[in-house]
Length: 272
Image 1 (cartoon, rainbow, N blue to C red):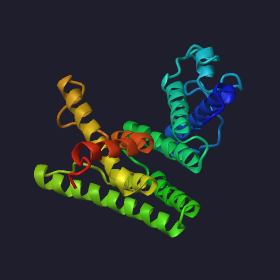
Image 2 (image 1 turned 90 degrees about the vertical axis):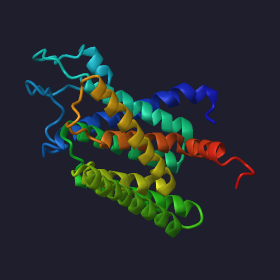
Image 3 (image 1 turned 30 degrees about the vertical axis):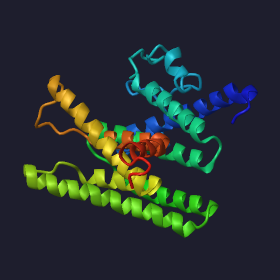
């Protein structure tokens, strides 16, 4: 455990690091679907093009200091920017508190940031970009290799990641096929299978299944609620990526606990 004397400064540093990564995540979310460079030009006001100064570009605090308005043209700046930064900071904190200083912590920081980026791009555009899902699979397999190298076998870790990725894309393909038979139309996009494959590459087959179940459950509950409230028409498509990403994030931090709880409830000691 972290020494109490250093706990608050350490947690503040972790949150600040996550918020800074969240600031870059905002750039990727906004620019990648538009086919724009992620590096040039520097961050600027989306209304007048004013380049943000150092004080204006501080994650979360910069937006609060400006009271949500551009210092040059005074146009409102979406609160989503500081929300994404704050959420990324909280994700970093959650992973750090769960796994302390470890390879898992650094790996899951990358994994959860990628999930957040993909979720919001899908929410905005109904598209899960192939370069990002492909990068998710490759980085997940590399992570499993490193985890396996720390343990007994890098090859064993790689095989676990491959199995999780293949199973993930097979599960979504099966759901798409059955959905097309039942409703005569596509019920999920091809990108959803690639996203679940990336989740499987990172988490392995067991936690990938939990991620898929949670994503389907959350999507069904929220989708049904949105239809009931008149926020969504029955025939209106709804992105599934954000729910899969949320399921993957929950599984990454609490998946082992949920799996253990499931086994204790449905397969108590002495039953098997």
